[in-house]
Length: 111
Length: 121
Image (cartoon, rainbow over all chains, first blue to last red; front, side, top):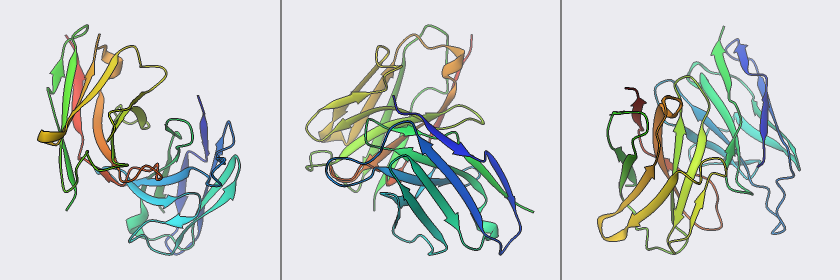
């Protein structure tokens, strides 16, 4: 099974400052079809997860452009250019190339 | 408008079988490429993918839980059912159902609100 490892596991950020989360997979997520099956979700307190980024860097419908994704192969990063209060919650990366696996989650709070 | 809603018992005893139902609207599981999945989350812990069924009735299961899981669908009722046998306290979690909108996409775009299942005698 593919293991997804996120760092850090928690992050305290001042509003308006940037934040970055790393996600590493135990196997390459690049498929022979040319797509890389890496996704980012945000689970706000008391809510179901919501999709932010699909295929490494494409923002899902309605996601603010302060969220961006990058990376390739086994190393990926989610960046928030300027953190806002509404961005608090737990961020998960997920792979979808071989079944589905989530990372452990990164809890983001506001200072 | 796409919605999914999970239903089932809030409390089950150890060794019992859990049956959960996902009732959805706004899409059809007979549409080519459509899939519905189950994902769970123990209290304060990470998400764990469990099972998926697609429009063609193909089924996929978590490697670690496959011997205990069965997923099925009733297209006419817009429902997907998950059964998990031999429940244990470590299976206490919020269970979510979620949709994959097209076969070439492998992300879950809509999720239910989740249903908390507690395993205790």
